[in-house]
Image (cartoon, rainbow, N blue to C red; front, side, top):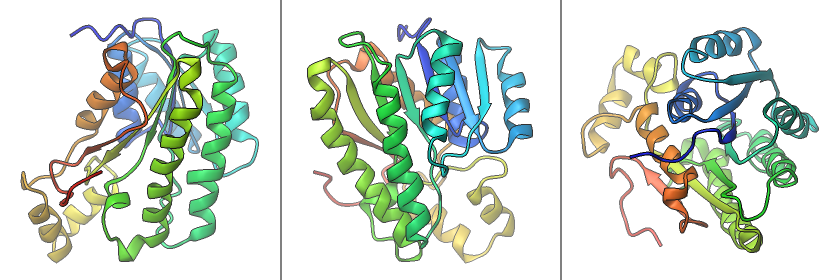
Amino acid sequence: MDLGLTGKRIIVTGGSKGIGRGITEALLREGAIVAICARNGEELAVTAEELSALGTVHHRVTDMAVEGDPTALVDWAVSEMGGLDVLVSNVSAMAGTDWVASVNVDLVRTDELIRAALAHMDDHAGANIVCIGSRAASTAAPRIVAYAAVKAATVSMVKSLALEVARRGIRANVVSPGDVIFPGGTWDTVREQGGKLWDATVKQNPFRRLGTPEEIADVVAFLVSERASFVTGTNILVDGGATSGLQI
């Protein structure tokens, strides 16, 4: 299926590894122009070099915890790409029980990023925003209470945003991954350590495996395309059926 993303100008935050890298790769394969950011400059440069074989990718070191950095990222990306069609907000503090860090990065700075992006998006031109959430927003998560709470707030924030920008013809959605494994990630470390946590995690996933960045990326690529032109204000769980209960 041709998603019609050729030439689309897209920002992907946290694009140097894991889900962000997977999303960047999927978008480049669809012909998009992508600007990525991360805090680790060396890792970011390596990723940009590797992915440049697939298309045009720009990169900039950015700390999404710092006031002003999200706005500067958007201004730079617009200058490099000549405009902006799509924002994929993938950064999280991943702060577990740290409320201050979680609220700052996942909500306050993410709102700054979104507002900066909206200022550069054209009305009724297929522009849209996707925030990467988490299955943790829909379940009890006692060990990561702040993280789970801000991810739930992200869904609420984006649902309200979708109504706010609908008159401009702009869409806004959340994609919430379940347990995703990739080299160097949290679950990769847990797998290497083995033990009860890994066994329990695999068991609670109906397919008896964890997801991959590519499986999340394919959903995001579809969602940002015109093939999903009537989808807005929703939270799409990509968790292999691990979230139990009716989602309303």
